[in-house]
Amino acid sequence: MDKDRIKGALNEAKGAVKKTVGEAVGNERLEAEGHLDTVKGKAQGAVGRTKDAARDAVDGKDRV
Image (cartoon, rainbow, N blue to C red; front, side, top):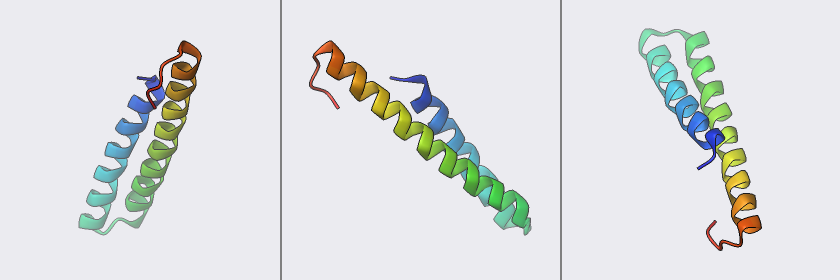
């Protein structure tokens, strides 16, 4: 598993928490930061999955 997938999952979780807290306390900036962290995490996860797939293809594995 690529480190980008792990970082992506952590950023998604952090973003979800920030967004939820922002909504709960009425802080639009915190809510927006949470949304951005979530999007960043999803992008990092996609990069990690792509790297894993490329690595598996080079190694001759059929996992994706």
